[in-house]
Length: 278
Image (cartoon, rainbow, N blue to C red):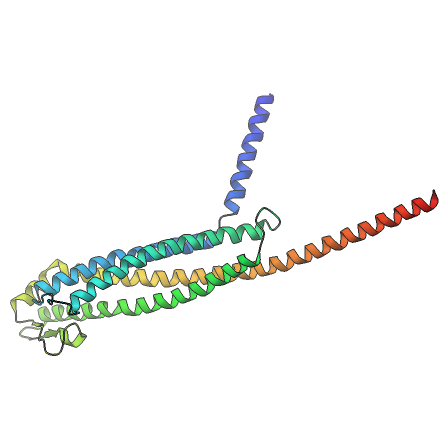
């Protein structure tokens, strides 16, 4: 009988511990982190593969080659973009962890104001710093989203030319890379519907795959923007809660101090009356 009671108390204690742990999870920050990781993964993974597909298309169908020496050409820019993607993936992986940690500490500070974790001035400064940094990153991701829409627009034009070439008989449509600044004005790198290379490019699966990879990368960048906005809302709400909690903490400290002073005064008077009586 005693063993059953001990088991029941143990199960009850584990259940209460689990409920307390689940109550301390910052679900809003968790959702924003998952959305951020998903968006960054889509942008970096699909963007990297789309850039590799772009290199193959330029070399195979547009007959472009890498420039010798230190000349910055389209291939050099693509390599730079790939390194930027590596940096973005690593940086936002770490930043997502930092925001989750901040969310855990802020949630703990709010729900357990007088526990082991105290709200300090340093904690409020860290929260304000994260708000400012997240706002800057949101603007940066807006720029990345706008920039990612450019290759989507280019491939959409190319895909439209391929589709119109099959619909309209005898049409001689051309795509000149000089229109998009990929090559210099002095270079003439274009393909027309009458050329064999254009027909092979339109029939290849590589063009369709690269186009859709850029679309998914654009969607990933948009998801990262939404995650940044979500983080801003969460951080702003946490900042307001922490600010109110600090005021409440100061009020409780002042109230406790005044009650202790009143208790000391009452105790002193009681002792004086007792001494006077004796």
